[in-house]
Length: 244
View 1 (cartoon, rainbow, N blue to C red):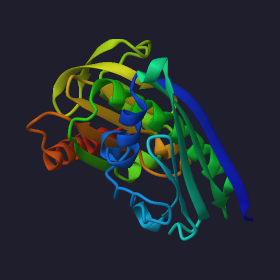
View 2: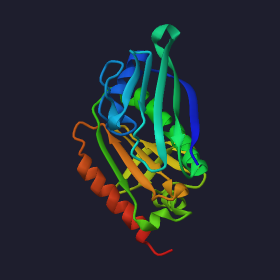
View 3: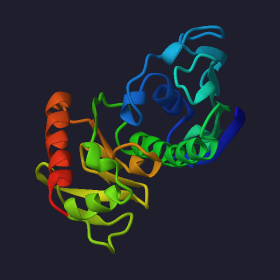
């Protein structure tokens, strides 16, 4: 049964409104995934066939689609309101994701809500530590075994994360190669790692019937998206091919 939804978040970040605007219009690969920049006018085109319905840089952006392309959703709208704080040195952001889910409403809403928190956290990490550096983006999903109910629980130990590792801790990670990182996000659904040159995101989408996934936002001058994708795909496949 079709039902409207609305997910609202507000936060402040150590970035100017102009830097936030640049991130949400042209820098989405740094924290989400690369998307077509919106055409800079009301009525302009935006990613995935959506339309710009509010355009007031650097303060107000809304894009809306009524042909979402997903069987479980018929309308999708994303709104950002950005205001200056501390004389313009910082920004306050109000983010609203709304629309209509036409099936599996509770599960779809739960997944969208929890993903929103992780994506907006990653936006802040990008703005504070990496913007406006160019990014090499890679995204991948685990094998079928990565859809199991406890799949994400296997990833933390495989990364070498102790059970008592907390957000803000410096950790030694055993991914496709060994590296040091800051554990910048961790809950029952997601893991976030920040190195000096990258943001590595682990998505526990097994909670919503999909496989565990990984995205790598690599800001190193010699970053290679394809090599990152291959390395993390091989690692994730190996995690879930191990006998239990």
